[in-house]
Amino acid sequence: MAKIDSMKKEIQPKYYPRAKVKCHCGKVFFLGATKPEINVDVCSFCHPFYTGQEKIIDTAGRVEKFERRRKKAIKNNGGEN
Image 1 (cartoon, helix red, strand yellow):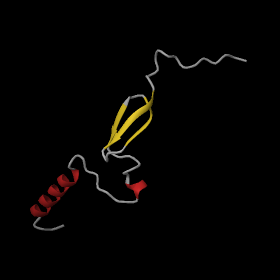
Image 2 (tube, one colour):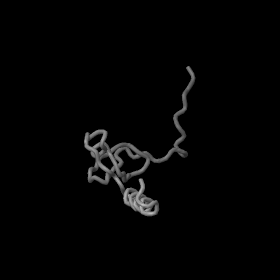
Image 3 (tube, rainbow, N blue to C red):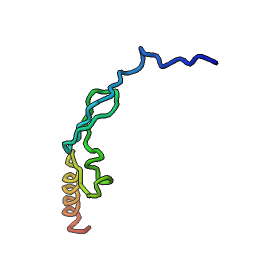
Image 4 (spheres, rainbow, N blue to C red):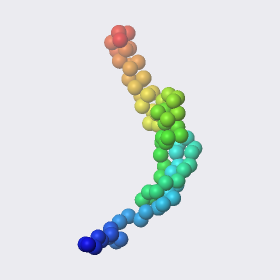
């Protein structure tokens, strides 16, 4: 039987079997990853698909920016939609 070589140790990233994952909602959990700590905006504890509750997640102000452009366009078009 042929010998199978394992992965080369000098080129593989360090693996953290208990990497800390912190979500914007406040939940903290652990999983295996190549970084010791990971920050996420959405996780399975707060994602609408898993919670069944609809939320608007707008970390960059995109909704407000869209509303301002929409109002400006309506004003410039004489009130037409």
